[in-house]
Amino acid sequence: MSHPTLTDPRALALHRARADGSAWFLHEIARDEVEERLKDVNRTFTTPAVVTAHPEVWGDLLRGAQVVEAADTLDLAPGAHDLVLHVMNLHWADDPVGQLIQCRRALREDGLLLVVTLGGETLTELRAALAEAETEVTGGLSPRVAPMGEIRDLGALLGRAGLALPVADRLPLKVRYRDILHLAADLRAMGETNALAARRRGTPPRALFARAGAIYRAAFPDGDGLRATYELVFLTGWAPSDTQQKPLRPGSAQARLADALGVPELGAEKG
Image 1 (cartoon, rainbow, N blue to C red):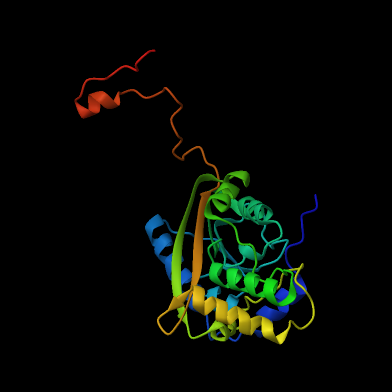
Image 2 (image 1 turned 180 degrees about the vertical axis):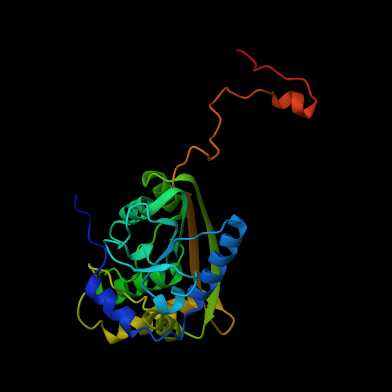
């Protein structure tokens, strides 16, 4: 089955190769959050794997982990792992549910998948400023910021991938930049600049980014600079197991809420 092409893999690989590591703050925050979440699980994982495009940041997170290159087809053997981390890459995947299915197949029974990715609120200000500026300057629009998934949609992918006990939550972040060029420099340093397959090729008009910067500063000021939003979305799910908790069937409760609260139960009014 073919999927729409979101990403230009050659451009993405080039941007990541040029990332200089001077703006890894999103990865560092995500890594700290992942470590805390694994502590909360309170389980010792013996055969972990980490799917990442940035092994220089994530490669030493878990002792003895298999570090797997982020790609359309993941180098994960079926049933080989009790923990799979998929970090900071799902927002560039042409087939995100396919990525989760591959991770699910790599898990042993009752193994854990933990994903962290950029969510739909990321760079909403930049997206709006560029769209308005490009409409004014060129009379048209070109995709310039990746269409990242909303938390509800991302959470639904866990069930589609066959994972049990799915949970999705988010960590919004606000960052102040001096100007739009300062923001663009951080995105280059992260390897997160425009790698969309449908992007307009060629050099954009010089006036475009100057106008976008003025619109951005006017609409989203932050002190003497401007505000940028990032959203980290965390997804967790487990390979199904008979030992896991199961939700009760509707109508199978053995006690009434009214009894627990010590109040009389009121019947529904009939018309």
